[in-house]
Length: 367
Ligand SMILES: Nc1ncnc2c1ncn2[C@@H]1O[C@H](COP(=O)(O)OP(=O)(O)OP(=O)(O)O)[C@@H](O)[C@H]1O
Ligand SMILES: CC(=O)N[C@H]1[C@@H]2OC[C@@H](O2)[C@@H](O)[C@@H]1O[C@H](C)C(=O)O
Image (cartoon, rainbow, N blue to C red; front, side):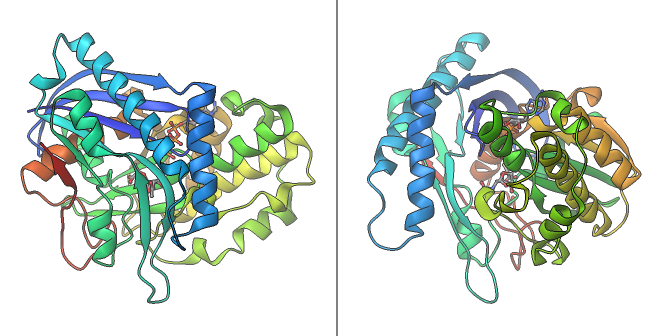
C-alpha cells in the first residue's frame, strides 16, 4: 500500500511529490515528500502549453506544444518519484503505484446545460515505462463526462487527514493555490466542496508584472496598500461568487483588468482582499458553520491573506502545520490517496463535491 502522489499546480513552480502508505480509506504512514522545482526552461514549455490551450479551447487539432510539455512532465515527474523513493530507500518498482495528476491546461466548468470539459496533459504510459511501476492518472475526466465539475478532488483526502488528526467536526479546510477551494466536513462526514475564487494566481501575476518577483512574499506588499473599493466591487460583481456550489474554476477565468492602473501596493491589497472575501463568501455558503478553518497550499504562508481570512470569516484559522499536516504536500499526498482509492474501486467524488448524481470513481491505470 505504498503510493507516491504527484501534483503540479497552476503556479507552475514545480512538482510536489509525497510517499503515503494507505489503503485508500485510512492513512497508515506518511513517507518522504519534496518539491522538484521546474527550471526556467521547463516552466517556459509548460506555460506555452497553457497559453496555447487557452487559444485552442478544443477547436481543431491539439497544439503541438502539448507533446513537448508532456515530455517535460514525464522527465520531471519521474525525477521527483525517484528522489522520493531514494529518500525512502525504495525502488519505484516496489511501490503499489504512482498517482499522477498531470498539468491542467484547460478547465471549463459545466454551465447552463453545457457539459464541462477539462484537460490535464501528462502521458501516464510514458511515466509508467520510465519508472517501471503502475501509474494512475486522468482523475478528472470521468466525473466531467458524468456531468460533474471534475474539481475539487482533494476533499476526500482532507476528511482522511482530519480523521487522522482527530479534529472536531464540522471542519472547514481551505486550499490556497492558484485557485482557492474549500472543503466542508459535516458532523456525519458528508463532504461539501467547491472552488471559492482566485487564490494566489492573480496576486502572483500582478506582482510578477510589476516587479518580476513571482509572489508577494509573506504578503508584505499587500500589507502596505489599501483595498480599492471600485476595483473590489467590480471583481465581486462576477456572478460566479453568488452562485451556489458545486462550482469550479480555471486559473485563467479572471483577469487583472480591474487593478491594472492601481499602484503595486494597492493592487496587491485589493487582490489579497478579494481572495479573502471570496473565501468568506464560500464559508458563508456552507451547510453549517465550521468550528475552525485549516489553511493549506502555498497561500497559507501569506500572512496578510491569512489574517484577512480570519477577519472576514470571524473563525479561528489554523495553518496546516499546526495540526501536523504538511501544508505544501497535501495535494501530492491526496493523489497518492486517490490512486489507492481507484485501485480499491472506491469513489472520490460526490454530489456535494462536484455535483455528480451519485458517488463515483474514475482514473486510468497503466500497469
Ligand atoms: N511565503 C509566501 N508568501 C506569500 N505567498 C506564498 C508564499 N509561499 C508560497 N506562496 C504562494 O503559494 C503559491 C504556491 O502554492 P501552491 O503550490 O499551493 O500553488 P499551486 O501549485 O498553483 O496550487 P494549485 O494547484 O492548487 O493551484 C505561490 O505561487 C505563492 O503565490
Ligand atoms: C481543474 C483543476 O486542476 N483544478 C484545480 C485548481 O487548483 C485548485 C482548485 O482549482 C482545485 O479545484 C483543483 O485542484 C485540486 C488539486 C483539487 O482538485 O482538489
